[in-house]
Image (cartoon, rainbow, N blue to C red; front, side, top):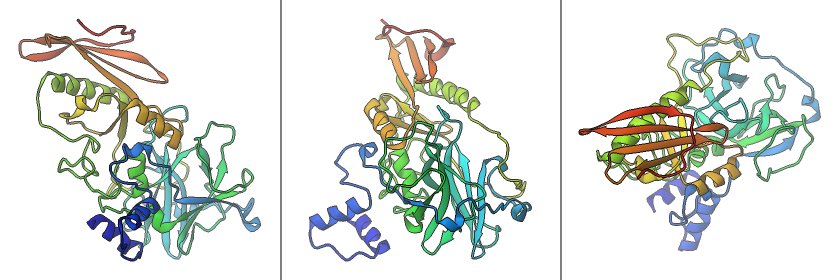
Length: 372
């Protein structure tokens, strides 16, 4: 009830008189009752409306590169897509792969930071809920004012030649004459005050009304596995999975794009405080195998059905499928991992005395049956 009262104050809603009113408020905020199953099954809510670009801004380019050439940003220059100013506030749209892993498309997800003091300090990052080319590409040198009252406006091209998410976009307009109008409060809303905007929590399958979704005492923004309640155990499963996940994370990080040609000639100051970010690995598997792990990056564990629901909601989605096989004697184990676009690999383990060791690394082979 405390969460609902907090949100009612934020949205200036009157006190409900019965449970049906509370249900309506939760539905309006995009969050149903907690007992309705996985957050990944929630309907997709949008912070934007698609609108036709006004005629006066069609084919009107206003390059901003020179004006911001000496601006020191807390994000890598190669990631910057657009920089614009409105009423002395500076807005930066950039791309990273924190919650949009590399898959069919090279681009990552679109994020926003902004400054109200001419670039001396910057906001926390806000996820826009959009991935590059799925189905939009933000126009870099748009002449459309980026901020107008309570709205943030972004001119976009629709990447109609690419596969796009099976989502019902609100609004219709011809390609190359579009802009997305975000309601500012919906974009930056952080209902539970955990440092993750609600749109990001929706992408991660977390509860935007609870700062500690899994209830293990570690807030969502700090928890490496915010959807799996941590249990400090050190059994054979935990030991094997810890070794396997460390190896998998190490290999996955090698495939993360760390450089691309900069969109704009801006600099990253060596003294600037970098924007906090957390690379995220989405995996399908048995969540019970992950409850005791400590990992160097955020891991979201989901079932196969949840992964399908996330793909239907967000578009192309390639989680790692991780399966553990361990024999009855607890002396040998195999961990299989694969993605839709990467062949299956096997990590083999053998228990020698009280310790588990790698017996064979990352074989590109097909595993056909569990261990005896």
